[in-house]
Image (tube, rainbow, N blue to C red; front, side, top):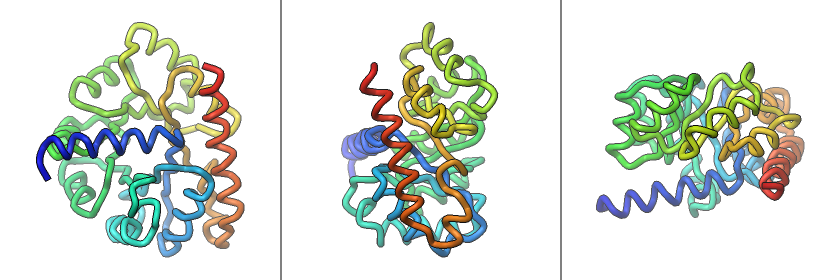
Length: 227
């Protein structure tokens, strides 16, 4: 694949992620039910799923989902890897099929690895200086983490002097504030336990997971309609 094709593919991946506007963070002790979980999320309108390197068998699950889940196979949904801490982890995730990479911190070699391979990267940052540094290094979206203590107003404040940024809050995002973050300028929201509840996954309660995903996607879409 030539360089221009890879750039186009990266842009398509970003468009897919932002379409649904919700990125579920799948951090579980056992990914045995990964296929059912991913299908349930996509059935709810989610267009991106983030596995995490902190989950056992995450790389194997990544390859499996790319092959067995129709949305990932046909390109209507994107599958990424999170909790990526360094360049080696990023390379391993990309080789296993990650279409985007998410990190909890700003590690410049990790960003560089993804930029070199034309894979969208979302490094974590907290302060305006960190956020701008991540953007200048080549971040496709900056993951503002942890967003728990910041609130939607922080996004409005940062974007006022830095409107070129593309931000995604993660940590503390729930149904009660997902739309507010979008209204404050976020391009998407990263959601963990408020969406991917361990009891639902353990019980295989996919209808509940699908219903919750749909609520998050609807909250994002309603907030966008007000802009």
